[in-house]
Image (tube, rainbow, N blue to C red; front, side, top):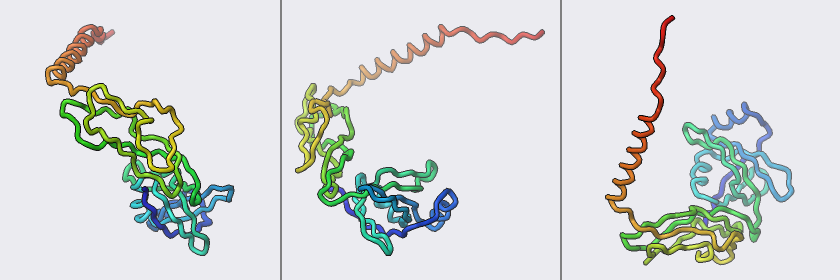
Length: 212
C-alpha cells in the first residue's frame, strides 16, 4: 500500500506570485487544501519533506495544520519548476477514511520468462477505485512462463482486496512477442537508411542565387 506521511502546515493569508516567491525563498511550498464541500484552505508546507513525500505516487498525506485540525489528503496536482524540478505549488484533495477514490496505479511485470520472449507493455498504468487509505503502490503482473502470442488483459490482473476496475475487462495490458533477431534489426535499419537516401535524391535541388 502507498505510504502515509505526516506533514506540518501553516495557514497562509497572502496570495499571488509575490507571496508565493517569498514562501519558496523560506524553503516552503504553497499549497491549497480543498474537498468535501468545504472552503479551500491555503497553507504552506515544508519544502524538503514535501519533495520527499511526493516522490511516492498516490501518497496519503496527513496534514497537521498549525492551530487547526488534521486532514487526510491526496495530491491532486503538483506544479514543478521546469529547470530544477523543485515543487512550486500543490493542490491537495481532502479524503476520509473508508472513502473510495479513483487513482492511477503503476503496472509492473515480475517473474522469469524465456529469453526468446519479449514483454511488450500496452499499458503502464491502470485506473482503479480503491479506499483512500488502501491505495496500492503498484499492480504486479506475473509473466513467469509467458509465451510468444500470449496476452494478459485487465480481467487477468490480480487486484488487491476492495480494488475495482471499471474499464473494459478485455483491455490489453501486455503481450509476449518474439525477440527480433540481429539480422531482422539490420534489415530494418538498411531499409530505413535506403528510404532516407531515396527521399533525399528525389528532393528538388535548391534554387541558385542570382544577381541582378
